Image 1 (tube, one colour):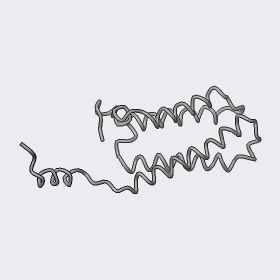
Image 2: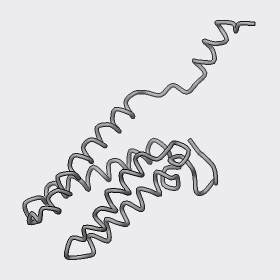
Image 3: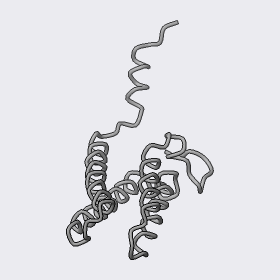
Image 4: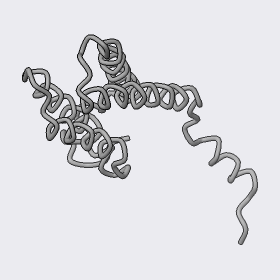
Length: 137
């Protein structure tokens, strides 16, 4: 028996309607972060003196902080979900680099991998909550 068109429409309108603004903001912040960190990564790899790329360093930090704030504002569970835990691992690896006077390429590569993996985790892992032991959206 076919479904009543009104019930189908009601089910569609009952679903949570999300604005496109958070997705657009996330796209802009991620693009900013990837762009700035790419220049930063390249400068370190090529041995450019810090004075010449310090602006990119600060832009990378600012965009990373903006991504964290955006994530927490979008979901209060973000810090203890897979995505927040990967961000914490990413920041922890960055702290190792800041604690050393010479750039460590192995750790820098791990920072890059942690960022990429964290950004591309499947939804079930990205939204999995350490606190709840299950996916929390």
